Length: 111
Length: 113
Image 1 (tube, rainbow over the protein chains, first blue to last red):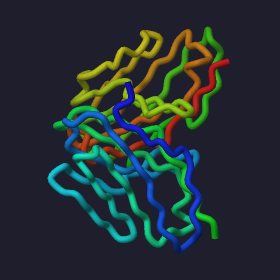
Image 2 (image 1 turned 30 degrees about the vertical axis):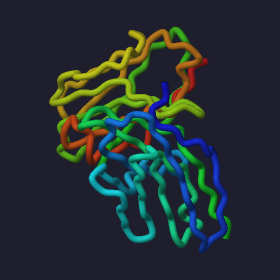
Image 3 (image 1 turned 90 degrees about the horizontal axis):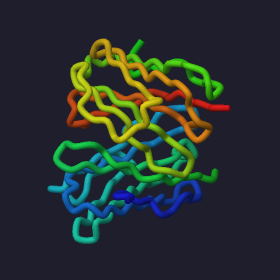
Image 4 (image 1 turned 90 degrees about the vertical axis):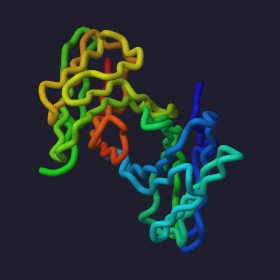
């Protein structure tokens, strides 16, 4: 049973435009969420996090939005740059227990 | 060296071979993890160690055997694997077993032939 889902396996966006990556979860006990970025042949690197007490967290060009009632998480990248092309994973945990990861969305930013 | 280092980067092994994956972290973290990344599947947690003690084993087959001799080193011993075990194996560490601030290694790409 997949508790974290990323339903879009891939996304293409023009450079300078906004990239929106989506993530849905099923476990209402999740209280901490992460986004990771992964380049080919490298391990995932931490990008941004949000706890369930907030509905938005911003870090430079990256903003994560949390909609607890919809059990939905999204990552906005604006403006998108070619170097943002990577696979993005969302992950969630409940009260410091193990993280559950989505299957990832491959983002391609077209110059 | 900094961060989480995994060796080898690539490994091809036969089903009757025995091999080991190595992970070393230079972050002073107390928790270490093995994850499996198969194509088109979510990242799967395999093992969790906290201060060299295994705290979680997510129903992983016994042909995968972890070893944590100290808080900086983690091994995954492999024997009699199956072709479906071919995947990217990622090591990670975090300050505590709560998992926040988790840092991943680059992974070992394993192919079982």
